[in-house]
Image (cartoon, rainbow, N blue to C red; front, side, top):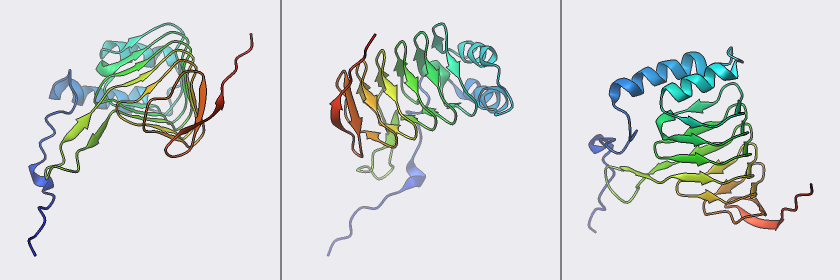
Length: 187
């Protein structure tokens, strides 16, 4: 019986990691992020927003960013106006993350733009952007996978996993997330 090819992680080179920044910028960001942005001691949102912008993030007005938010690559991040990002969120954006206006990303949510291609022995990254459109709500302890678009006013409920695009004005639940009902917004 022939042997199956095996995984050889030593051949992983990470060449598709952190588009838009070199080693020095990435290293400095990791230090700044740990000390000031992600740090639980720093409740000053304006400081966090200023640092994110200095490292290339495009951020609108009115961002509420809580403590312990980990943003891997601010140069791959766009956030619209009047958004909330809750405690312990992880924006693992080795590819672009676009967040529209009036979006809530609740505590503990993970936005993951990269994964490994398990079909290739070196398991290289296979990255894809995430888009979260206006009025969407990403619930607590959820995961949004690479390449997903969360359309306008869609909701991903607590603990759910979005593996495919979420259609507008629908509420999604489960792993993988499926629509459970329509979202109705009153004025």
